[in-house]
Length: 232
Image (cartoon, rainbow, N blue to C red; front, side):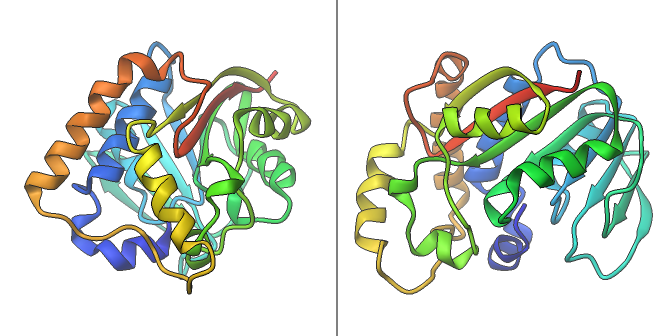
């Protein structure tokens, strides 16, 4: 989770429809994928690592250069470590959730992340979709770019990984958001995420739960691209 978005949403982040829906997509991508040790690069508030610890992961290491220092604690009865840098490790699942769009060398970041994983580990990546949607929201979050499914697959392959599956998500709201982003293209940097009422969060999360049966086949469009890959 982006630190800037955490500051905007505060305690409401975990129940916000966007992050509730993104956890649904994460679970769908990892269906039938075994994992025990998670390495979460660019983890921010560790919202996704904590979710996976709740799902049964044995441990998690969260890496983010924004952390003030290294520390370790327990979450859901399991160890979660916070570190500023990637260290050699044996993770069997690497997360790069909304990270690659922040750096100039996206291929280099994927390769660097693999230092913390064991051979055969799975890598799950999510990025914002379609450069045509680049707007004030992206400038606020300091994004360098947005991706298509093919562009993300090219990055993954160049980093030495084998693509397992690539899909778009948030297709339900793509037309509305695309229209809004057209008006925000030249506006001042500003996030599109705002705190909603529990009812609005519940309705939007339900809408994206209904998208899940089509998610596994969606290579047409959405606001995000998800790619599951594997180390040789």
